[in-house]
Length: 327
Image (tube, one colour):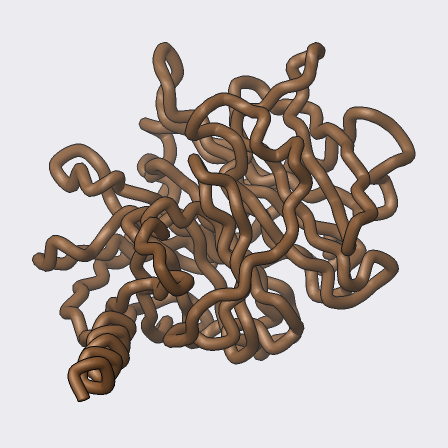
């Protein structure tokens, strides 16, 4: 009887841990350019609005990955303290205008473990976006886990051993999965600060036991902190940050053709945008997602990690349109 009661208590506790709790979040619109607020074109991208997110709860912040539904309305973000952050993006005249239905819940762990706080990368498993399974990349103890739902326990996936050979806390910050195109079914990971002998960022594609190691040419002093695979699987984009002295904080976004992987080393990609403070309202940018908006054009959504240092950092969400020519 005691064993049965204990088992029921464990099940109930797990359910409570995974349950999403509503959280009040305020959203304040901002413009990317601090000196030319009327600008709409930034590099190869078109500005579609930005939101400064704030909340009084101590559970809010530290968001290092984001994914959206197919319509770009509902979103899921992950915190590096092991939490899901969910909500709905609001639009006015096709621009980001607000946020609603926000809630926070704990990321569930496998049985007999509670060390799942270092979540750093998030990606959809299929074309269903957040309405299908999601994968999370964890740093420090490098691993990837697949979540069927936000309340389910994860299934651990295989990972190339070389991913764990980088600097501590700099091994893996970006993951993705090709769910269409010539690389369908392959997983992709890019290291944050694991460099080859020429200073290029190490990266991997793998499917089952087949692994393709390659490298990405580093752009200036930027490091890759997130990636998003395009819906057609023919390319992927990276969000990259510059967040160390003597440089001012910066953000770069690049696009890489899937077909270029394996043809040459390293792959350089195409720079879509680069900007730094104080000219641009940029923070510690870490997560990126892609969706096709109702107008048929692809949009990129990026999010920043405030490191729970609200006095000096912020949680920002930005959205850009990708012109047809570069999709």
